Image (cartoon, rainbow, N blue to C red; front, top):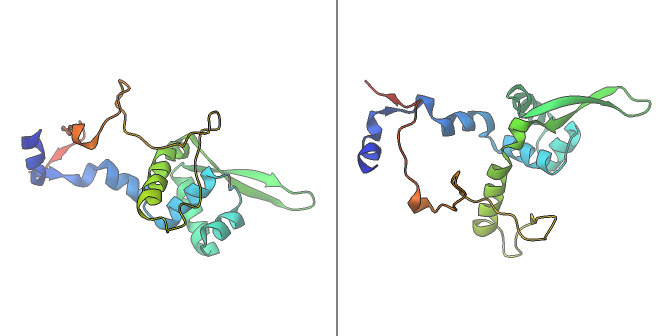
Length: 159
């Protein structure tokens, strides 16, 4: 592994999954809109208000997240009102829950003020705290020191 990682200058990072993911969800407002979607927010004005962003920014982020397939627009109509859209997480968007959980967990540990975190996530069935964890496909918890990085099929060598 050491030789592989030492040759990183010979890699092109144009096919980097982290960079591509950040192109989709890499803004503060996008991540906070996703947080709100996980907390049950569905309507445009609620996203803007709860995230603390202006309507133009909310509209742009919701449009981007919808175009990327993380949210979907679903029509609804209040009695006597015109039809509007609400936003719901898609399966693709829902798979970001571990990312949001990891960010919340890190923020709880390293960025919360002296009063502590504003919310807690617990398992509804038993009441235990919910955490993001690294696990291999065989079911083992994995420490950072036990991760081996190897070339993937999409690695592009710099010529």
